[in-house]
Length: 312
Ligand code: 13P
Ligand code: SF4
Image (tube, rainbow, N blue to C red; front, side):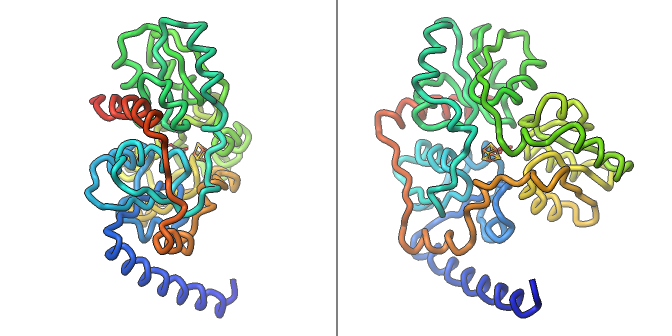
C-alpha cells in the first residue's frame, strides 16, 4: 500500500477504535477474539484465546453483551454457555466448513450402529450436533476428554486428522468421522520439507488438524495455545509454524525477537478473515447479527459443553 493509503487506513482505524470503546461502555460488552482473527481485531479484544479458552471465558463473563470474533459455532457455544447474555458476531457468513461436514441425521445413524459408544464431538460442530453429543472437546483437551469417559468405544466427530492424532494416546476403539479442516489439511509434506531446507535452524510446530503425515514431522504437535506456549518457553529462536497465520499476532507479542515462518501462504482460514474491525464496530452499533439457539437444543447441547469444562 502506498504511504497515503496507509496513513488513511491508520486514521480510519483510530476512529473505529474510539467508537468501539464508547460502544463497549454503553452496552457493557466484552470482545472475545480467536487467535485466527485479523490483527486489527486481536488488538482491540478484551480477551484472545483458542476455542477452549474462549468458551471458558464466555461461561464466566459478567458483561451483558458478548461480541464473538471467530466463526459461527464459537458464537453458538458462547450463547449456549451464557444463555442470558446477548451474543453478537461481526458477520454471519463466518462459518466453519469442518463443522458443516457432520449433521444430526448422520450422527444419529452412526449412534444406531454403535449403541454402546460415547459420542465425543470437537467443539467445531453445530449446536444441533452438540445436542446429540455426550461430551465436547477442543484440540487443547481432546486426550483428557477421551480418557475421562467410561466407555471403551468412542464415536469421534468431525475431524479425522485430530481423531488420528488422539487415537495414538488411547487404547479405546475410535470410530472416526471423515471431516477435516480445509485450511490445515492443505499443508503437505513437500511444503514442510521445502521450509525445513530453507530454514534449517528452525523447529517445526504443528497443529493436529494437519494431516497425520505432516503432523509426524513436527518437533512439537499441539493446539494453538500449546504452540504459542511452546514457542514462548523454548530456547529455540526460529520456528516454522503449521497452523493458521493469525496465530502470528500472539507469537510475535510473546516473543518479539524470535522468527516465525508460516509453513505456506495458504494457512489462512478465509472464514476467520471474513470479520474485520469495521464489522466489529457495526455489530455493536446495530446489535446484529445476533446468535439465537432454540432452548430445547441449547439445553441438551449445554450438557456436552459443561461436561467438557469440568474435565481437569
Ligand atoms: P483451537 O482453537 O482449538 O486450536 O482450534 C483450531 C481451529 O481450527 C479453530 O477453528
Ligand atoms: Fe474451521 Fe479450519 Fe477455519 Fe478453524 S481454521 S474455523 S477448523 S476451517
